Length: 101
Image (cartoon, rainbow, N blue to C red; front, side, top):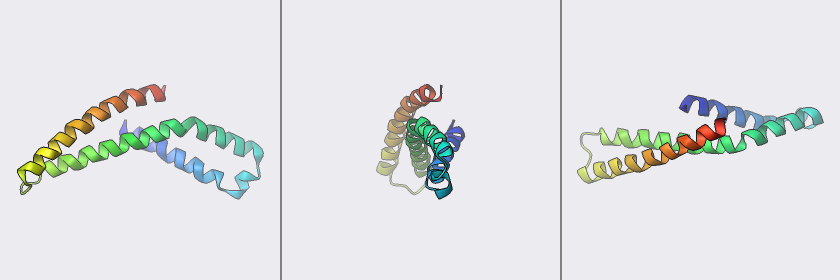
C-alpha cells in the first residue's frame, strides 16, 4: 500500500505544479480538468501524507531499537512509540481503503 500512496502523492503534487503552468492557466478546459482531478485527490493525498509519515516514523523507531548501545529507557520509549504508531497506522489503513474505493 505504501508504494501506491507514494504514487498518488506524486500525481497530486504533479497536478499542483501543472496548475501553476501559465500555458495550462490560459486553457480553461485543461485548467478545469486538472483542477477537478486535483480536488478529487486532495483528501486522499492528505491522508497519504499522514500514512507515509507514520510508516516512516515506525521504521525510524524500529531502527532505534536495533541499536546495541542505546539506553534501555530510550529503547523502551521507542517500543512504546512503535506500539502507538502501529495503532494509528491500523486506523489509517481503514481510512485509506475507504478513500481508495
